[in-house]
Image (spheres, rainbow, N blue to C red):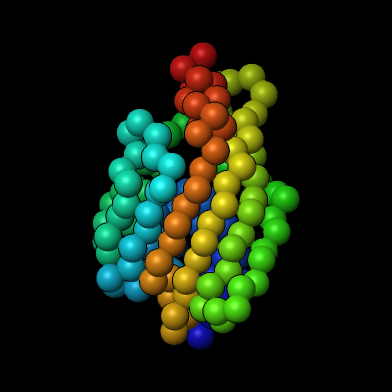
Amino acid sequence: MLDPREVLARYHQAMRHKSADELAELYARDAVHEFPFTAPGFPPRYTGREEVRAGYRAAWGASPVRVEEIRDVVVHETRDPEVIIAEHTVVASVAGGEGGVRVPGLLVLRVRDGLLVHVRDYMDGFGVSDARNAISR
């Protein structure tokens, strides 16, 4: 059974691979993934593993952005052994684009029995906007 840090490492791996299947397999069947700071085109939440899979498959499949690396990862432990808070910066490139983009983010992960049961995913709206602008250049 995976602990929260191991789940986070696999979460980041799925992001680098842009694999909705790898990501979805980290979630419990009835998990909730929330986006408290939504941006245009993003839903406020996914409910259930299959909605996570479908949502990320659509988003990642339609995006020419390629995640190069995830850096500046800082994990904060909490008093609740099921919950960790992870800061990170996603460094990405766009095929045919100039330079790259950086999108800081913060994840609050609740892992129970080795699976994500609740995720709060805070993305930097300006970073997402910069990535979208890079795509349209």
